[in-house]
Image (tube, rainbow, N blue to C red):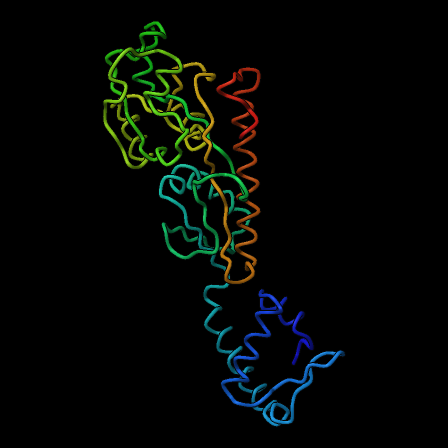
Length: 294
């Protein structure tokens, strides 16, 4: 009644006009009496509804006040859900920049629970794509010193390989057997080694000198730039993932201001990541490592 039309009410509720109409009809069926007269000029209340309007307005007013009271402690909180690897390897090193820009906001990270925003590693078609990743070998500085003088074609022989099963969900992503088949730096046993379900644990294995890992450069770019991780092979000896990190808002209601601000900031940071990847690969692209998909 406040909005004056099904269309305006639907826009405010974030549903379709048909859905509003269905709810009204269900309420009328439940009460056993019509509530609205649908005129060409809009909706008008029936006599039954007019007699109840004063009490309805008072009741809804009290409910709105209670809802606002309960919402107040969480009004500046935004919740983002993603897998632990993306949260710890990509988001965590950058999050201080968001909080410095918006110090009044609180960011809560979670894994697999309901959230304002969700980031998922999945097929990248028809999604709000943050970035695809570029898979290539990474190693610790200590192990890089050990293998630096060995010719590229035999650098992996006898060297422990670490496997991140995280990328197995992307059927076209590199694993060690595919990488060796493409670039030919190891003759046998490329499917052996230590397997990790999480990239973060595999990266810890690399930094503790346990071996060499095929990993997404976008996730570990901060560690590579700081020198904590080293790239032991030419950049062209890598490939883009088909999957990407997709940003998905909660669809139950319009995004609140904190979620909108975080979404825009994530897009900005993803643009920086894509630019950094492209800058490293520029003029080095081959048929297996094109700059475009980033």
